[in-house]
Structure formats: C-alpha cells, structure tokens
Image 1 (cartoon, helix red, strand yellow):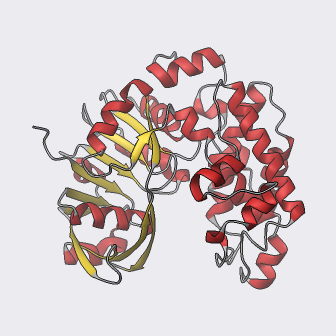
Image 2 (image 1 turned 45 degrees about the vertical axis):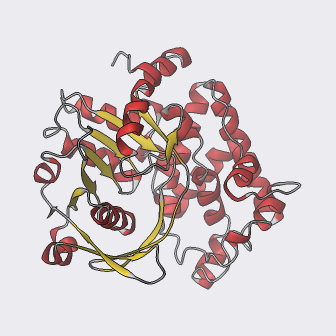
Amino acid sequence: MTSKLKFTVIGAGHGGKAMAAHLGLMGFQTNLFNRTKEHIAAINELGGIDLVGFEGEKREFGKLQKVTSNIEEAIEGTDMIMVVVPSSAHAEIAKNLAPYLKDGQIIVLHPGRTCGAIEVAKVLHDNQCTADVTIAEAETFIYASRSDGPAQAHIFRIKEAVPLAALPATRTKEVLERIHQAYPQFIDGGNVLQTGLNNMGSIFHPALTLLNAGWIESTHGDYQFYIDGASPSVARVLETLDRERVTVGSSLGLNTRNAMDWLKLAYDTTGADLYEAIHNQEGYYGIKAPATLNHRYIFEDVPMSLVPIASLGERFGVSVKAMNAIITLGNIVHRTDYWRRGRTVEKLGIDNISVAELTEYVNTGVREY
C-alpha cells in the first residue's frame, strides 16, 4: 500500500495559500513556507487557512502541520515540495533548498513558465546539492484562486487537465503516480521543453500589456484586458509572436500547440484568425487589465517566458524579431535589462549543446556541465 504523501508548499501568496489549504482539507500532512515570517503569522496562529470554494460560499478549514519561515524545517520529512512563487524566484528558492534536500524528494514548479526545471537543476548543481531529487514542472497553475485575507483563500476553479513533465522525462510517470494521490488532474506533458514552449502566457501577457501601456496608465486598468486590448493590430502582433514560439518549438523537434489550437482546446473557441478567436471567448469578457505596468505580466513573463524562448530561437537559428521587440519595450518601460536578468541559454548552461544533446538531457537526464 502506498503511503500517504507529505507535502510542503513554498510560497504563501494567492496560489500558495489556496494549494496549502486545499491539501490540508483533503487530509494531507502539509507544511507551508514563506520567507517573510510576518506574512504567515495569522496562519501560524490559527494552525491553518480558511478556504472558500467548491460548494458556493461555504467556508472550510484547511489544517496545516507546520507554518514556518525556516526552509530546512519546512521540507524536513516531506515527500513533495510544491513551489508556488513567481518564476523569477525559482533560482533563489533552489539555492536555499540545496543544502537540505534528501534523496527521493520531488520538487514541482507551479508552473515552470519556460525552462524553470532546467534552471532549478542547474542552481542545485552549482550549489553542490548531491541529493537524488526529481524536479518537475506544471504547464500552468492548477487553481484559479485569490487570497481573501491574512489566513483566507478562495478557489474559484480547478483546471480539469494540466500537463506536467519531470526532468528527466523518464521520471514523469513516477511523479504522476505519486501526485495523483492529491491531484488526478495532472497529465503527461511530454518533457520540460514541451511544457515550457507551450507557455501561452508568454504570448498573451507581455504584448497585451505593453502595447496598451497608455491605456493602462490613463485608466488604471479600467478596461477589458483581452477584449478591448486585443485590437486587430495588436492581435496581428500576437499572431507573429505565436508563430515565432511555434517555430522555436519546431527547431527543438517539438510539436508545439499554436494559440488558435490552444483556445480551441481550452475553451472550445474558434475564429477566422486570432482576433476573432479571442473575441469569441466568452470567458475573457469582464477581465480587467492590470492597474499598473509594474505587474508580473512584464516583470515575470518577459524574463522567465519570452527571454528563454527568444534565447533558444537565437541559439538554434530561428528569427525572433517580434519577441525581441517586446522584450526591448519591457526593458525601456521598466528601465532594466531583462536579457541580463532572464533565463538565457547561457545562464541555463545550455548554450554549447546541440538540439540532440538538449533533447537527451530533458528526456534522460544525461548531460555534461
């Protein structure tokens, strides 16, 4: 008989609180870590999180085993470490985990964005972590949720199917078998290049935000982000970005899903072009734009999604002019260099390997550092 998994959730934001509360509610022994002690003080005092969802506005209590700002204490004796923080923090989390990981533990990034598992593996290696751990990443976050207060979370929806892949892919089956104790919704995502290149947020979020910068700043986001923001011209930019992403995937031997296919699969939405398909998606109506340009759609999705895709494209001979243009706009607006801060092939340690060697690495784990 398989023993019941013990979980650690890293991060107590909107997603982390929802996941920790739900796991506790399902009866799993769950620890919650957040680096800022004050941020989890109320949860620690209550011993868990009040959760709304599933049955109207019924409030239930997700009991937690341990709530701590000490990462060693948080992962001690647990089987699966669920990382629910912005992907820009993955490297720092990996560095902090490195001294304390034990053989057999599984780290799951929710989600990995693009090349998240590859980045975490390199950071663990660079920090002399010798534990035999498995790193996996989800293609997207499983919950639609928000934080309702210091010790409250609200889950609006749980996605029905979320692709997940392990690094190496030979361990994906084992990760799925174990995580299915809590989440039968996870399905085989191929390998971590597949999950990373199917990152639709990289196409929709930065461009829709930056190309509507004036509207966001003048209205503080008081317009429909997808419906009003995706004008015919903006939608043409999205189509070009999407073609570049799919072509980068093809250069890596991947059959990457395009935006039209994704909208059909996720929402059963079609159209003559991307503009029509977006406007035919009823779920996009009513979603407001970000209130400010200081938003994760730029500071997370540019360096952790667009930069790695564009960097892979440049490494393997794909024209990524549109991606480079959006990255440059992000650099200008935020007065920073997202190429320097982002997941380039150089930073990931994959700048001197071939497509065949990269594929072997993500599939079997064999590589030379």
